[in-house]
Length: 399
Image (cartoon, rainbow, N blue to C red; front, side):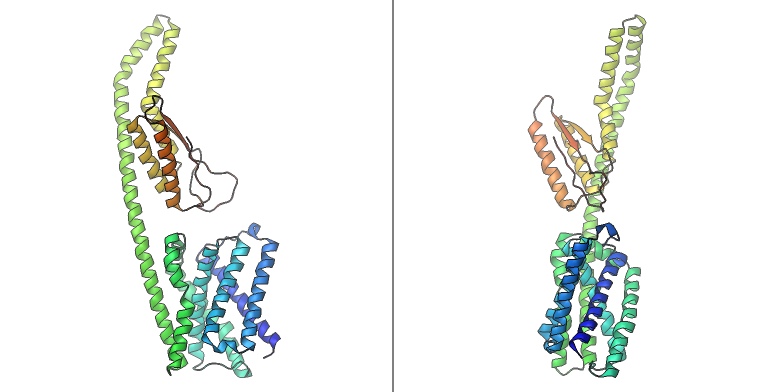
């Protein structure tokens, strides 16, 4: 095969793999946005240069016969993975680690579908210089392979594997452990196949054993991930129960204050009636003002706090604020909470957000502790008019 024909074939193959990555990222994992406003000509040009470089490298490797060595196969596999991840990162302006996770997920399914297709149609390596074998290769690679690929995707979609995988990608701890293990799949796949074939095992049997090993590794990976997720869910449920307990106690306190206020209401109204009947408007005005202030100090502030707290849509942040509000109430510190619009998330991780909020609020409480007019003002706001996914602008508390 000529250099040009190999280059064209590699171009088609790598572009198809990139299309697979984009499709999986949008339709299955639902991570990549389908918003054309995010695309940029400069970024697309850089992505094109990146892919052309990968295609040239793959063509040179093939023409020089370097793919006969297992190390070069593994190296080229990683170059392709990095190239696809960089292209998606540039075009969609997503974080590289998320693009790398999408690329890994897609490429493993591509390897599975391609290997299964070749196992069905041929029992030996194909020589592309022979026209008949080249036609078989093209049929399997661009006909049967994509069909098996989309069938596997459909099964994974029905099993909701994509949802679990997407949740895993959102956690940095899981990325640092599980994703690094998953990134070793080219070494496992090509290394195990070469080792088995070097021991005299046939190609089909080697591929079959390698697929089973890879499948077992993925099942273990999925099981470990589900255990970690269930542990986090359990911890989250415990936090929710604690929040509900604090919330119920707060409502019970408000109810008790209402009971007391109702008991004194008739006496207050009697005094107001006598003052107004005697025509002492100044005293009447002062009396109403004092009664209103008493109501605000006893009940009104708590009602406003609960109303503002309802705009916090992040369970962890709401629990933190409830805990701090109860603590300030015990210390005799007045807290003014302001959340004018629904607050749904920030760019940073929820653990980092809660840590920062807790430190800032603790510092504010420490600063005013012991004062007669101790007061802390907390405002949580999100910038309006900006398109964001859940987890966009950070909360800003201040004293």
